[in-house]
Image (cartoon, rainbow, N blue to C red):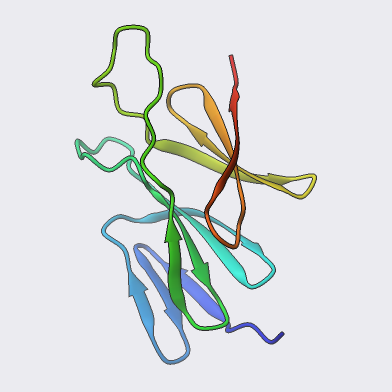
Length: 120
């Protein structure tokens, strides 16, 4: 399959004939086959967004998924936010790392959470 070429410029994902503009800068991206996993930089921002990871289809230049909102047990801190602070792809697994010491193993094509791991 021939995937579209792209470039990243601050908060824009630019294709030959279109662009996707996110509300925040793109901090990191990982290309997995025809999907581009995009992690938005929320450092030092007081905002309610915890779902700051997106899957973009490079074959049709569109957002296919945004990571779902999840509830994490916080030991009494039920209002604590858990934005994602990094992404990685190792041993054929896409992992999203969040502020609350959790990794989510996610299907890169659909954004479906396959496994939740505690990291501490």
